[in-house]
Image (cartoon, rainbow, N blue to C red; front, side, top):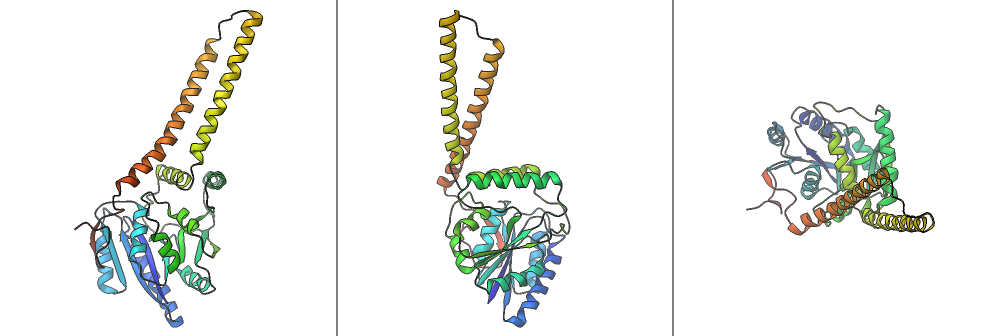
Length: 316
């Protein structure tokens, strides 16, 4: 069985060689079991020497295949490119910063041989700040009440996929991609195991608070239209409240005479309704923007350099 290792990379020149060394050891452990391995590295428009490191690794190891983007297109595009170029019977998706321990690859392969199409590694939150752990738990509770698929806390892209799962994911051509949700949406028999959280080997993570927030919004909007439905329900509720308030004002005027409403009440109501309207417009705008990008039909990425065959997204 050929196993493909897919690793998106962004500014990983300091750690990529060490990562490759460790996945090579994992490959050597699998050779006696009749499994071979290939390595698919995707340079997501890095600003450092990541591409040079990939070229050096490819010169030393013929199993290395690399793809370099013309600019930074994001991790989702890099993951898609890696899956497109992977030729293995199974594909292991992992980060190149060694936070996904390569020694777990053998365990994944063993679970795959038991008939599971997806072998999912779920990290513990040992060492995470309490605030981050609580925020993550609240986020997943909220999301799982809204989205059409189940997203598990602690589960990321680190997983093994069978060839039919990879083909199913590649058949989903949408531009706005949220891979964690896509993996859950395609289904197929899956199993999950837990591993201890590992520190980043070197460098700094590109996942800032802003990036995490945007990623969370993508997860919320990518697999349901319930925020739109919630906006509709909220509008109807506000309309009902306004009707009841109007009836109360008219009734009070008929009984007690005309009284001038309080200034604070008016300002509070106007400000609150304006805020609700802006939120509704924001939700509608997010969905409209996604439709806008889908209709354009632009490629997910453009390739600057590669040692494999021309891709579908490489413009002549």
